[in-house]
Length: 357
Image (cartoon, rainbow, N blue to C red):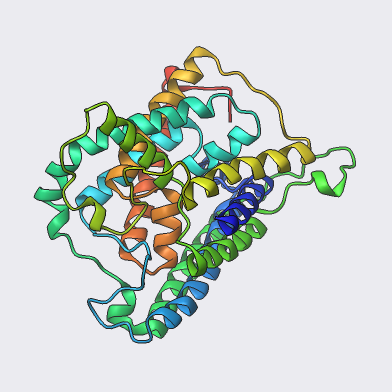
């Protein structure tokens, strides 16, 4: 737990200083063709791929099916995952940040973040109600595709890095460098970090967390709290078929106040608060009623999507792709499509527009 505390604090500080938010960096590219943030995400995935495969070699010397490395977020591939990712992407765009960024922006003083997180918890409960139908109808028969089973460790690394390099070249080709902003001299500790610096640090934290504790994920604790409260209120299905046997940001019925992931998430908020305070970025921002409603509604969509997809942009996309899981790539594709649709709504439908960014 002490290591979870340290890693969570570092993770929150890195997210805050580098503005490592999947929605924010995607919005920059969609709106102005500024690809620097997305290139930073690709840098995190590339370094994380190398680090994860090194850890895989320690845990599992030969990637022979059906054996999987312990704890890695390698999930089933089906239309349920695709729909969950799509809904999550829409919710992320409407709420203005992914779940991990809602936590770090809470540390910056954004008061719409708690509304988004409460909505996320409600979305998890809605996902629990749907789960048995989705699992029995589709998920239990869905294949679990881990690239090293088919390509070996060397081939898996080569394919992953080639795919990331290809995406990087496309982004660089479409990239437009924004005009340099003129600002007064700023103390070095108040400067924002380039996203690629944040991405490389996120990858290093992710590899360390996987080696010593568990893959990175921020929804397990929130989902577990939602599951426990719903169970105590008597609104949870009597049995959630197969859920506890699957990989990802697993939810459990809580029997103790603290868990490794719970401490990690609390430390994330504290690390972001410390970084924002020292960098001059902390400011209490009160949302309008429209912004509050949009944050809550977006949170509900994120919670439902994260529950059926077994994780969010950190647990399924980041940790999943680093683990060479096809589920991570599928989540990235459909989450990106949902994000674009949500961004379109925010700019074409006046009700969804917002001054908070």
